[in-house]
Amino acid sequence: MGALRRGWGLRLAIVVILGIIWACSAPVPAAQAHAIILVPLRSAQLVGPRHRGIALLRQEADAPPDSLAYPPPALGPGEYQARWKVVAADGHVTEGTMAFTVAAS
Image (cartoon, rainbow, N blue to C red; front, top):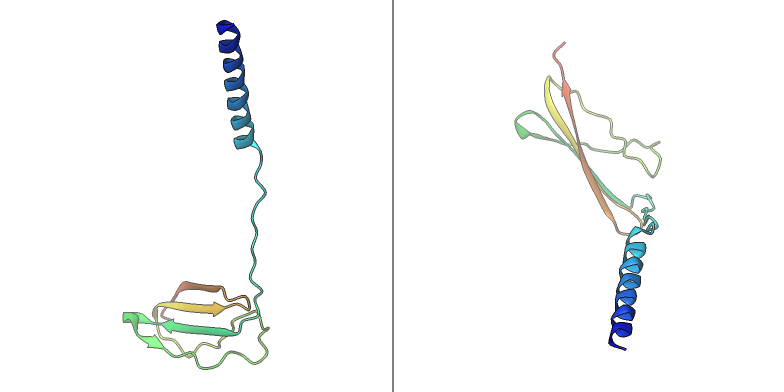
């Protein structure tokens, strides 16, 4: 009877281990979340050479509601960063920076 119990215990352990392996190898559905980009709050800042802030006054009037479009002022040669931040309709904040260089003509 002891050998029978040991055999059953071994089978149970193998079944449990195989179940765990199967559960870990099963594909997990990808979680997807997308903010509705109706931009209620937005800001954009242009930072120029020597980290000098340059005001971006008004977004272009014909820009779609899910876009940021600011006409740049006249820029001299140097390295710049456009920094932006938006708050989507669902409250998620998204921000980023885009670096670019203006070359001397």
